[in-house]
Length: 228
Image (tube, rainbow, N blue to C red; front, side, top):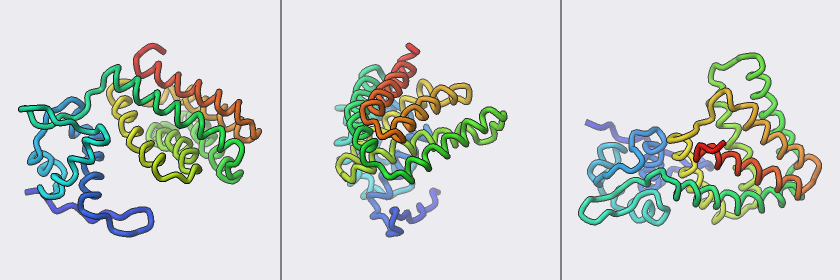
């Protein structure tokens, strides 16, 4: 028997509604690969996997469909998104449109303390790599990778963009899980690309920051399709 899920809270410490908790449960199961890309699944199977009641799952499905995180397949139930070239193209194109514009603004107006913090966290990852300290390094490098992008997006102060970016990040993560996870040997290249962005932020150079971000996203896209 599945244990009742623990009540989750938002960043302000307020308890999430059951349908919001079910959403978090679904995305967690997706990113832990308990639910596989391309898998056909029923609402009752989602109940079993996430531990949330059928009512919450039923309320959840329209949101997942709207966000492209599940689709209804006639006579076959629901299908988890497949990781294919179409998903790669769409997800990375979205990233480029949003992040290149966002980093221009952040270069002009970003909080200097946040930029300093970004450099420090990235430098720590590089130093650990150079020391050969690989214990938990990949997980921490992925967290630092996400930290830079979320900091730039969150600085826009636009909830619509932030939410859309979070959904797209889930799709990017699915692509990485299927193709190119941030392996330890890739750290100097990936984090080095971030350091180029950070240097442009420190210089308050919007065009240099935009160019560095565009190059960084393109490199990630090439890795996702095994071209780089």
